[in-house]
Length: 407
Ligand code: SAJ
Image (tube, rainbow, N blue to C red; front, side, top):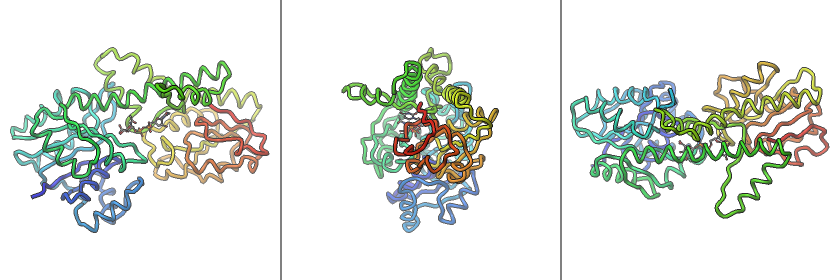
């Protein structure tokens, strides 16, 4: 008989995971503390958009293999996919412990608990396993860090390689079997510490390389050369892969996970410097904007921020670098924000047309495809365009006298 699975946390990771498992004929309950989200799912509506998710949801509704619920049900396997924010340079496990407390009420001896949330390298062995051990029941435990990128989550959840970390080989093999019901990529087996550190290293690699690209962009500005062209040419080298500079990093992973190596004084000074470099990009952009506004003599500037989500073509604005930049700009200027994808942010999003008509300065933070169509000649009110993603081309500026500034 197939096992019943409960997924705790129906966010960008938990919901697609639950639906993929349900599509693979497992019986899946989806639990979330957010009752509004559960009600929405019961009304057959998705709480966020992600490529292919609507189709998959419709499929499992037909199959009746997925049930959203705001009370945690009995199950054989519990998959925890709740947020693990950063606190004092370590993973804040408060939501993981809350989920475990709920599981305890329905737990049967021998059940399996899987953590998908990103945790520190030794968090499973030193904090989570001891917490469950206190229940005095037999349990199986594994850490399977998620590795899918928002915007292409389903494809990556199915096709990427996975790591199943467990201190017990039999558990690891059973969990591998469960995941192989929907994962086509290779499923590797290791222990929980190696699984957790591999995940953190992946995102640290990206964080440090983005910081390097950001530093290159600042050097390029001082030495007056085109950073984008220079990176393009450097990347022709077979062993070089320089990342893209930008307004800083967002999302729930790259700006957070590397801190889990920095905590507890691990001497990870390069990683910490990279995190700080990426954070400092908003200050850098704000000061460059101020300088140029002054240079161009723009009085009472109205700054239109294009893009609020943390990266292109997604509606996810967790840890978006747009927010700290807007806060800095608002201290001195009037700021209007627009994003065609985002509608649930506390910050008011205006239609693009309105922002283009009312602004004298534009700063592009997120390179959504929609922005490629903008013709600045239609908006003579705009005197300065600061493109932090190198999205705009000559095409956008045909017959326009606006100054085009790139990062
Ligand atoms: N960014 C740059 N320059 C670049 C690449 C990205 O400034 O060259 C910025 C983006 O604009 C964004 C941020 O970095 O603000 C992060 O975006 P991303 O696309 O690099 O990564 P995420 O956070 O959407 O997803 C990452 C992925 N990790 C890796 O690629 C190593 C994904 O596979 C992970 O599953 C995910 O983190 C996670 O959940 O850990």
